[in-house]
Image (cartoon, rainbow, N blue to C red; front, side):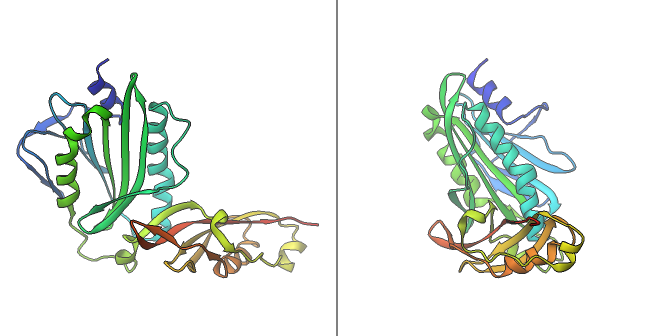
Length: 278
């Protein structure tokens, strides 16, 4: 198996793409430029725009995955990260011979003046030292994954195409944005946030829940603002009689502010509370 074939399999390009010429892609509200010598393949589906760039003689594979469903709430963004982003990154890490991805999104790139955050993974593929970068960003209320996989020796070969993509990527937004639309793009998904809490008040055990012998773990989805304060909280699992207490406690929590690319950012994640009957 050649290095190029292995990279194609790595990101599951399982359909037979049709090559498209030119130096610009523009379709269904998604647009970006690319060097003319790179071959573009569009294997989009009704649910996902999926576009790949490759170059003859190099192992580089650059991809854009644009989810067609609009991201309307911070909770939806968090759920997409768990169901789409993390399984994808974990699969790439496995292919590269890694035990797993880094625990947090710690890398960022600028996309049209806005920060995309994600992961940079280094390992081996078919015995060849290989690097994979996966970034996520919300543009036009759509979740995008930007991917660049290449053998380390071909890092310079893909630099111009990668820069062109990042500098020119545009997504046309919906005619009517959701009330949270302009804020969602600035939220970073942060997973489980318990370990980042510098103040985590314990919830009171509701008397009605005790009477009903209700116990267990309540998970609360939260958005933490640039100062580390909880901007919103919503229970997503746990006993119904315990959820209000978990949400109330979460609203009083305080977290270490998160900074990416030198700028403070909002973080979407979850915090958990355990209720144990004595």
